[in-house]
Amino acid sequence: MGIKIHGIPHGATLRVLAAANEKELQYQLVYVDLPSGAHKQPSFLSLNPFGQIPAFEDGDLTLFESRAITKYIAHTYEEKGTPLTYKTRKQMADQAIWMEVEAHQFDPVVSKLARELVYNFYFNKPTDEAIVEENKSKLAKILDVYEARLSKSKYLAGDLFTLADLHHLPGLQSLMGTQISKLFEERPYVCQWCKDILARPAWEKALALQKQI
Picture 1 (cartoon, rainbow, N blue to C red):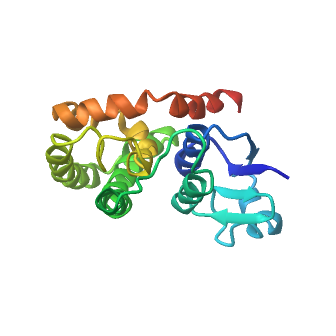
Picture 2: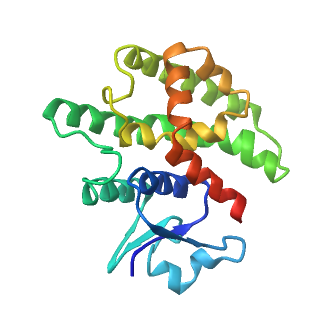
């Protein structure tokens, strides 16, 4: 049956595509037609009962939630491609911390900024400047913490690229063409980290799929 990634090459689905590419896996991207409501139909709900993308199949195993999928990929295909995880106790702990930071500190703020500055613009909706300013301030404080961390190691969990870095990619990509990019550029270690991970071939391969739909 092979690996199937159900979604579109945007947002959280990109996180899964990047992980699969880092592991050099063969997979099929199954396009989910969101405008038609395909993600709310019984066939898709059998894969993700919340009716959200992405969903993932590996043979007879089904998963949803992008971060859970990337963890599965990293551990199941441990010997293939980029390691993506650490094995030593200290570095495993550091990786776990920064994965939680991404999910609970970084992503909620970035998602609000992306909605106001990217998606509202795309759908011709007004930008709520108050929301932008509030979350811009929050992100600046978060990035100060990142700058301090990245002054000590090349990547968030150490000197190897891991899921802790990979999970940031969709959020970073969404903001790079907006006014918020200045917050990243003003912090030299954060800036270098962004340039590094956004230029990874696995990420560029995931983004290239956008041209096929």
